[in-house]
Length: 158
Image (cartoon, rainbow, N blue to C red; front, side, top):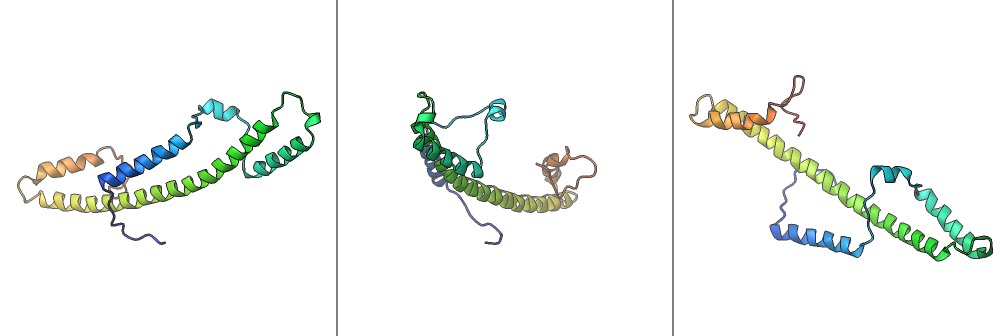
């Protein structure tokens, strides 16, 4: 669907229900962890092509248990593979949702900023002749004081 002006709302109840649904997702996966950057760097990575490799190594391990040390847990390998495959599927769905939320936020944020810039322009113009608007214009103008030379007020950074 191509982008059009977004005219939508989320009620406080909708927001609470969405947050509750996200909490339910987290509760269903109590094993989730957070790695430090250093931990992430040190780990052996498994991508899409590696899933097939791991699957094939499971077949080899199950068919040739006698060549593996007695301490090697083939069932643990199978469990890790199954969880990795399930998480890969879930991550894809979550990434699609995150991308849609991010794109929608960007679009609706742009709409809000564009409209606000229009208001600001009118307030600045009207403040020259309308008593009481100078303070409002100055207040709105605070947003742009941090913008350095070379940046347009029409394309705010944050």
